[in-house]
Length: 174
Image (cartoon, rainbow, N blue to C red; front, side, top):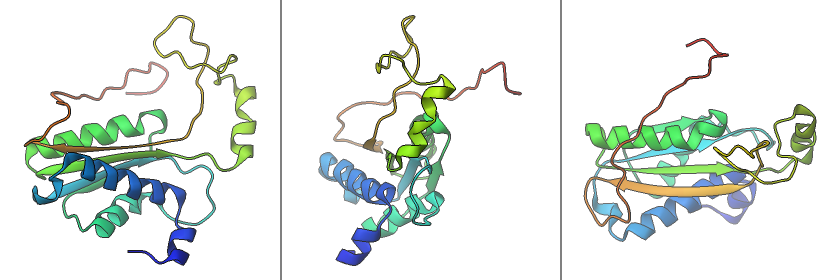
């Protein structure tokens, strides 16, 4: 439990990660009794000034919620949450942990971070994101937090049968 002063000074990524993880665990019903639980986080440090290293985010969540198991943090821009989910699934499948929580956060607090993006040509000119569509003309930034709980045993709200990771950008070395 954090004091009001600690909570007020908490990095927004950390606050969202704690809330997202707690909600994901609560949604499962009986997640606390599964054994070793890994925590895998995804967040990009781009505009908050309190010096918290985001690689400590999963450890902070684990400690605050009394979990124990493998931890991992990813900051790979747009693919961070996908990779965190993949790593969590691999950890549960391989037996490194009995269950895992994945949480991804994005916050935009400094307007100057977004101010230069229109000049870069990566933002949508119409403000609409259309992934995998011929009409796509760029990305749209947004804030979000998502938390998922994975386990081999039920109750299940969905099944994640497979996941994979690849890199096929011909502009970068393989």
